[in-house]
Image (cartoon, rainbow, N blue to C red):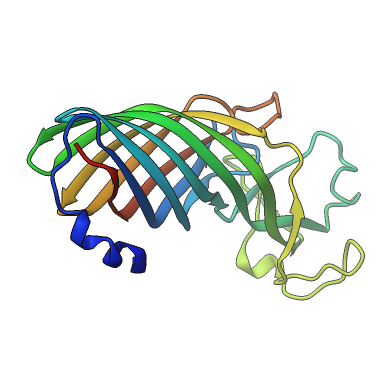
Length: 249
């Protein structure tokens, strides 16, 4: 923004065909994970930081081609489960089923760079719509969780599942080499796809040299390598940027 202030005297003219603008921006994104049958339970979205920049090439007075580069932190939270399926193998849950240890809370965090091309069309004074294609490249993927023990869970007569009630919860225990309830642990996820493809659909409002951008990213492929379920990202960005003209016409 300091650079933008220094350039404000030369950045107020209207763009014409053939002009080129550089627009850095920062903002937040809301992301979630969805699947037809997600084995870890129902997910809820997370809000994270994002930033990036774009080059805007005017091909007509009201039309432009945009090339952008972004950094995003995506992810989701998993809701706490209050039921757990009874295993077909009686020995699967420690023999006599006196207790169950599960990951009660879990969250996923994925850092990635993305780059794409979009077509931008002005539809009315100050407002433009955008659409294009985008590729994202995974930098890292982690899952955070905490283990919780439930003592002597009851069986729901309707669902036939273990019902995990607050009264059954054991607040402190040693299990799996000293892991205790209430502490967060994390591990790297190695089953995530390294490359993703999506369609960005956006709306931009411009006032003088400032622009506010809202973009929804429609994922076209699964972000996991697991063949048992198709886990997809749903991401929505809200950013504010400042236009710096590199070439005026």
